[in-house]
Image 1 (cartoon, one colour):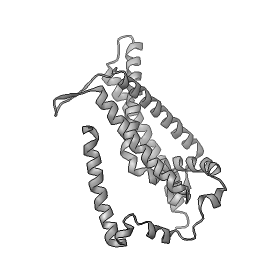
Image 2 (cartoon, rainbow, N blue to C red):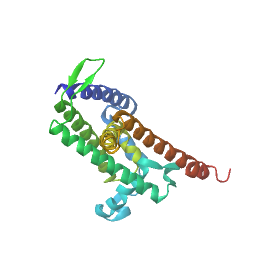
Image 3 (cartoon, one colour):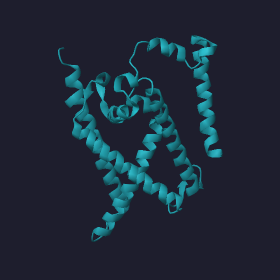
Image 4 (cartoon, rainbow, N blue to C red):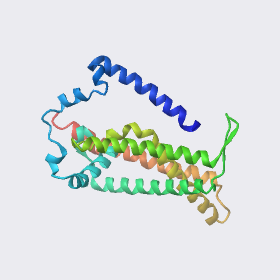
Length: 232
């Protein structure tokens, strides 16, 4: 309980500030700004009107949501090459599998406790597992809210997942960290003299960082700048 009391309390406090702001602007009965939202989207076609049924809409919704989360720019008009999205999907699945391995190790208490230099205490594997579950629950909640909104109006935009960016980033990092640790251990066993594990880990992390930076440059100079400077 102590692990979730602080983040829930902070979220409640920040949420109350925003809801109080809405009540002052839109009135005390519209503190979620739903009436204002209905006025803005009046006349916009609904999801059912666009696709006929939710199953058909889902086959369109999730691919667009994934692509726009990773990179679909210029008000959804600048789309990357399909091969890049395929690579990002493989990358995401790879990290998710690593996270699953990490979670399984935590549930079996096979992950050694982490000693924090500044707090001088050891965190148990059960605590780490609970924190990971909390992050997954938060991501699931944000995804469910996004899907729920799209039941009425089709809004397959990755920006709606941004409130869960912290949870997504931590999960991605933990999953990749698990694979990097396994790969570094394998490299140290394969080499004749044995490469220090720390060297292997830093080398793999550097290669991964360089690949992600290269992807940013490709998106910027191959797609975004040419698309947004046409006709200028």
